[in-house]
Image 1 (cartoon, rainbow, N blue to C red):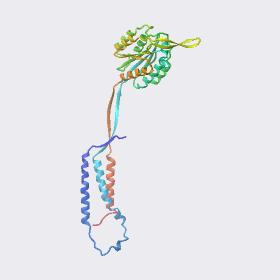
Image 2 (image 1 turned 30 degrees about the horizontal axis):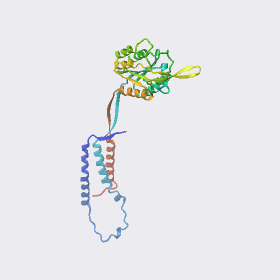
Image 3 (image 1 turned 180 degrees about the horizontal axis):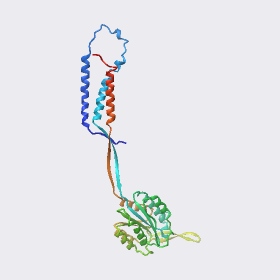
Image 4 (image 1 turned 90 degrees about the vertical axis):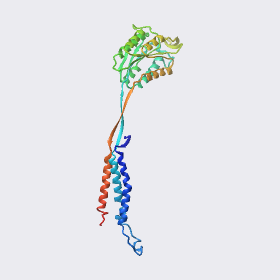
Length: 331
């Protein structure tokens, strides 16, 4: 669709001022050509009907005026323009590190911490179509569930398959972070980010969390950490011969260590105590980690004078053909 039409030589429109003078000249000449005939009575002309020649006698004048109008428009060079945008963007490489230890089955978030985290992460992924995103899961050990990819459909399917019990028990925050660093450090994008979510205290693995944080800092990787779990006691499910039983357990999150990791990598630590706050955490991270998009606007012009020139030519030929055929006058 054309956004607008403009004229390359609009000063030609001043020629339209000639039209009133042409009309005055036409009527002045016609008055001089008229001859008066005096008759004694109009009775012989009562049933007189105008001939076709008389009925269309005004057409040459109209054709001449239209010829001038369309010729002026053609000389003014009408041009239509279509707008467009070239968009240049560079995505971010984001590695998600998700704690899947048994404590993530606590139901202070609904239906439980791990399912609530998966739902929020899926929404986060859907809102970032230009980014490379991968997934690392950890408990007593760590595992790369999905490498960095732009195929977010695959990532979401692999995320849905994540469940507690896939790995050895424990909470190896340092090892999970170190694995995420190893998977994102060689990415070609300028910005590299890790979002680590955990609900416990590091008690397993061979890499200390602060050491993993230092490694991330060395590679220029920002590490956002999220502590998930209510404050105080939370209901944990336990399998028993009589079915699943619940027991309130104290929520212990290594917040000081997670804060130090984030602060050392120029990022932030967040605490999510419920489903709503967890969503807000990821929304805030989403806003903070946005790439700049360069937009270059352009216009394409195309000449539209041809239809005006053809119209002027048509009306010129119409006037000439009428004057020298049907409306031809004898001096």
